[in-house]
Length: 328
Image (cartoon, rainbow, N blue to C red; front, side):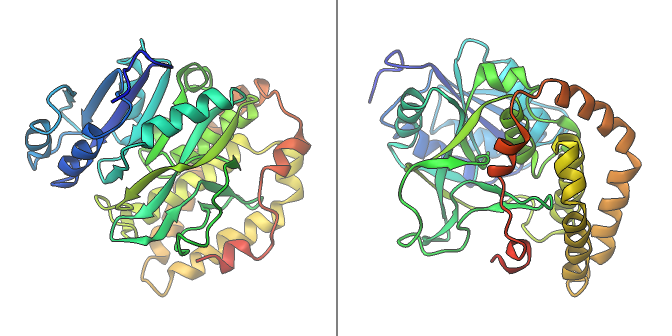
């Protein structure tokens, strides 16, 4: 095991909510890392299944903060960041994410090689079928849709080279603390879903880049706790996409791509109708608009801090008209 003082100090942050045996497997994988983190902090969002108690036997050095209510993934991670102020880097890890032994070492190695980047993403494999990918970083489309790159593809045919991405999936990602704090961390009003895309957008606006690290491999359960196709995930995902676009998209790009944005939201509603979730998606969009005044106040502060040109930002996005409708 590499000594934790060799290189940047990294804290591993895990937000837990009724994750059952997944947290045990996660901490077992963390205990096998070739690079030791300076701290492992678990924020427990008022779990009732005893998952933290069972898991600590496998990583007794971890610190657990038990909350009396579920404050959401975004706010819980912000709390974890505030409690690990001595560490330069923040490795976020979902309890249903199981890293390979060199995961943390590869992420920190990439951080040393690419000082222009403030965020690094992992090669996520489906825990239930490791021959297929769960994602290799987030794609952000000019319409405001976001998705995981390479999701569902055979792991053997996906890109194996390190490259710039729009943002990493926070299920297993590394962030520079200074940059994370500089842009305000996660937006706690999101509760969960797409808070990592929003953070990545704000980091990019502030002049930071993100990178995919193919050697940092992690098996991911993919929304095991909340349910990938549940009403909960549909609501929060579609509400938060609206907020992410309205807060972060520069005015000129928002106006230019407005037809695509409107078409995307209509298509999303139509896509969810056969599932019986059309009403859920419609309510998500309506609730997003109801709270738009507060979102626009945040937008003014975000855009004042922008350090990148509109052109460079646009080049980091997907422009394929059909991509939001043909992706897997």
